[in-house]
View 1 (cartoon, rainbow, N blue to C red):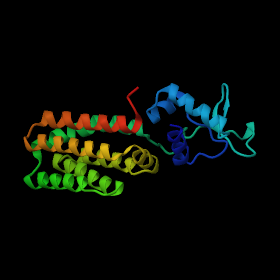
View 2: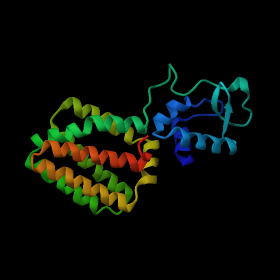
View 3: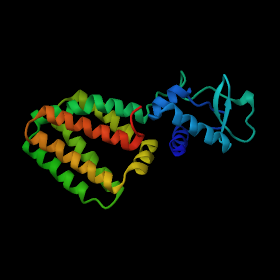
View 4: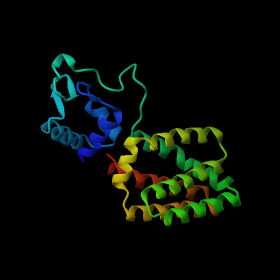
Length: 222
């Protein structure tokens, strides 16, 4: 499990002397129970990767790092705004089920056919990269079918985060052949509801699909 925290540190570009976010914030960002996060922090401290100071926080260790060299946390005022996997899933659960509901009402026959093709090609994928490609195509066609420019813009922001290094590593570690098969089944259920013009079922199936993905990547909800 410590690999999640290591990937976070790498993706954030944290250097010796940088301080990690407060424990509560870090647990929320990574979608982890605080007890699990504490175990990770302790493990990395024992490996000499972290320095923990009571009342000051947890810092990235490194040769020559002294108390005076310890710096403020990443993401403090003045840093570029960042988001994290747990936040992305929160946003997806708010936006994508409603997008699927709209698609059930507005999708054209051609869009339905393209969704079916993307499912077939995803099912036939022989690599993680190929599967991810057709997974993204399927979701993008649904967004297109919803015909709402603002929702499409919000979705593109989410997709951009999902293309990041930290997200990519977490997906790679979680995506087994069994889970890829399960995602294909979920995609087909979403598409069947869209074909039937059943907006409530499309919304429900998309919500369940995202919950499953969140559980596979982040673990059970806290």
